[in-house]
Image (cartoon, rainbow, N blue to C red; front, side, top):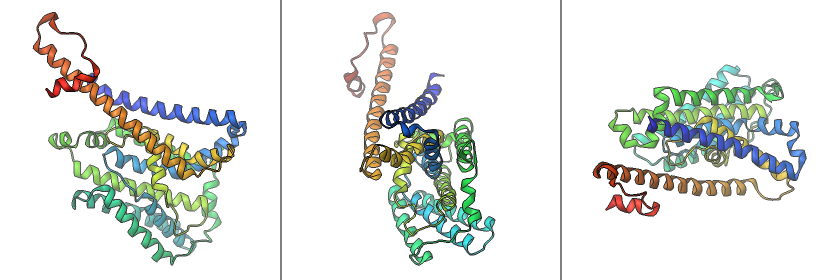
Amino acid sequence: MSARKGPGALLKARELSSFSFVALLFLLVGLVNPGFLAPENLLLTVNASVVFTLLAAGSAFVIITGEIDVSIGAIMGLCAAVSASLIRDGAPWPAAIASALALGLLCGILNGAGLMFLRIPSIIMTLGSSGIIRGLIYVYTGGKWVENVPFDYKALSQANFLGVSLFYWGALAVMIAGTVIMKASAPGRCFAAVGDNISCAVFLGLPVRATKIAAFALSGLFAAVAGLLFVSRIGFVTPMAGNGYEMKAIAACVLGGVSLTGGVGSLLGASMGAIIMASIGRILVFLNSSADDNTITGTMLIIIIVADALIQQRMAERARRKRLEAKLLAALPGDRLPGSLPEGRAGEGERA
């Protein structure tokens, strides 16, 4: 029973840490500049995070399976350009939305198929597809901005409840539902199982190939939805739309407790990280800092990756130590079991 509770307890701890980090960050900035904690500013920060929230959710599926997707920014840009041009040119909204969703889903499936059938590492596959998609955006738009999106479509992003955009309420509902599904359903648990130990997943007969392709398909689909919301919020699309968003999405996942080694994380935690990513620019303004938010994002990503690696190493060492103590307990009768082994020598004893 304890083995089954371990991952859940770790996941809850990571989600709580993410929420605590957001609260502490906002509090510290508020102490420097109280204006940051004004309700209207906090609402603006939350509403601005909706695109990052969706991108982080898509990235979380892929990262939890032990892979990486650096094409989501390009996929978002392509879907945004296609949907914006169709809506601008008078196409029915359902047709424009469906086209964008199908395009994002197709891009994600192709990424997953390249990984699983052609054995191309995910970082290489998605990096290559990102370049191809960026080229397609320039071809499709002719290198020009997609402007003059109808006001009615842009007005959708202004609808709110209690000051929070309906878009964000919808995204939050998806995050909660996705987290519950990944914890409580057999197909949902496959994502973490495949990312935690792919050899064991294969041995148990889990659909490893289908799970990883599904993760990339969901990543592309979430990127498409983010593109649709991006058009409504911004009102125009440039050929460079979404450029650099993949780093922010990955950073949001890591900040939200999603381990880059796979097997641990949740969509709800990723949404907490997305709020941090969306708030960096505003924080720098309130702190009167001239630092670039990409610099801050990259620095935070490196620090957290190093910290996560150290935590994983520590956990692996403790696991080895417990296995060794269990072996000694089985080998030595009665009270002859020696005292606790030194932390640093547990791995040496097991290897010996």
